[in-house]
Amino acid sequence: MSIHPHIHHPSLSAFIYSTLLLSTPHKRRKKMGNSLIISLLSIFHLLLVFWGSSVNAYWPPSPGYWPSSKVGSLNFYKGFRNLWGPQHQKMDQNALTIWLDRTSGSGFKSVKPFRSGYFGANIKLQPGYTAGVITSLYLSNNEAHPGFHDEVDIEFLGTTFGKPYTLQTNVYIRGSGDGKIIGREMKFRLWFDPTKEFHHYAILWSPKEIIFFVDDIPIRRYPKKSVYTFPLRPMWLYGSIWDASSWATENGKYKADYNYQPFTAKYTNFKAIGCTAYSSPRCRPVSASPYRSGGLTRQQYQAMRWVQTHSMVYNYCKDYKRDHSLTPECWR
Image (tube, rainbow, N blue to C red):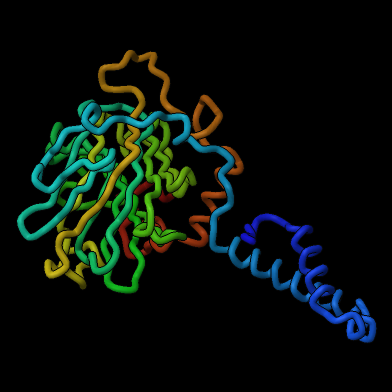
């Protein structure tokens, strides 16, 4: 019998009670009385409640709304093209595998540029030693504005044996990712193992906010507080796997070890919908919630607060070693 920790099972209590009665000989049961059995049942029930609440403590509450369900999947060949490393990319049963070895990594790019939208994919990561390796899904206009570009990142930072992946979210605005880097990183340790199965990761970008999602649970909201701290120019959707040994794992302490090559990442269920760079000015931005005007519901905010309380391991605004005159949104 499988028990979900979120659900109370009165039938389970009745089942245990009857089992205890049936498994106890009649004479012994008469001698000991039903009170002892009821006491044992009460103890078991308390343990069950404790177990359920313990499990709940490590899993986010429901957001109550699932934006990915409102967006249809996009055929990879219709929506994307290979950007680099074509020999390190293959499709198999609607799943794209890209990989990194000593010779090359690989990347892909959306055919269309967007000025807002919902962008996501189901991703499954490689287990074991992946230090120095970055697997990513991100928006960028680096090719259109080299040296002065905008970028919105979901990056999985590779790891060593026995340690979990770190999911890094980041935002660069008008060249803050070029030359002298001014990152806006928030990092998370996920509440599940991202190597076991596919999970959905997404970015919602509208003219007034950027929201990062994991399995439709919002994990970060980056609002527009100024035109100087928010990306407004059209961007393309990218995915890639590459060697970032200089910084990816514990600030570069652990490097990519090609004795464990190839390093692979699998993508499926691609989603990219919104206002393209060619859309009418009347195009309505995609919303992250039932509200057509955007924003999050109270239940979505509660889920996000849970993630940021239990799973966030770094927040650039709370890093007091940094010069926050360069990131004024931290003080507004």
